[in-house]
View 1: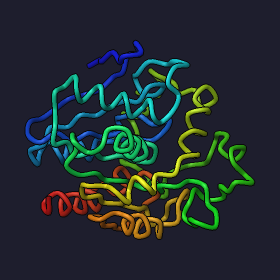
View 2 (view 1 turned 135 degrees about the horizontal axis):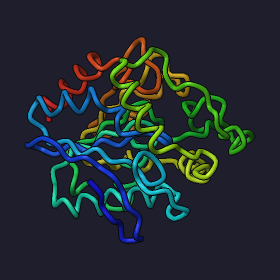
View 3 (view 1 turned 180 degrees about the vertical axis):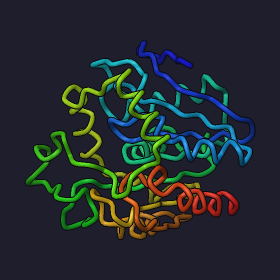
View 4 (view 1 turned 45 degrees about the horizontal axis):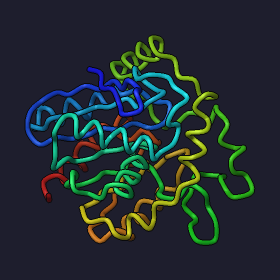
Length: 260
């Protein structure tokens, strides 16, 4: 399905299942097909799953407009308004989690009942105030080291089914990392810690035990900022936790959802 934003950009999404809505947001350069195991699990558990490709990636339109996290958050707000959904559980991997934090910064949590952050530190640049940024990224190396390729995000292979579906999507809709570089820089520049300090809904932070991008200790440090925060490290997983270790991820997600 397609949705036209207020700045006239066509975004592609799927909307499947019934019940409480769950929004899935993937990382920069990724494709919504990466969520297949999570989507199947949630639909079988009785949830309605909305899976969005961000602008400039997946099947969504390529554009020079809105290459910033704040616009991604506005896209989410407009899509949820279009679908007339509330009480949403937001789950974001990598930049998808930052998009959720940006949404809260702009619009609060009125439409969300809980958030899940998958392997995304709230501050990407490490300094004397925060040591859990993107590995190697400091004020001295920012933004030059963000040039693609950044290396594989996975530590263990995803299933052949997921790999095949992502490959088909990538061939149909190639990602232009150079064109979207300014979005990555904007993403990496942000500091969402103040947003988390005032977060009014539960947050689960899940880290990959073998993430090539973040020290998994960031998860506990991040959850500690949030009034209703909790964290978990999934072993034998890299940055794409939900696809690399879907059974362990779904167990952690299920336990969190049961507490809501």
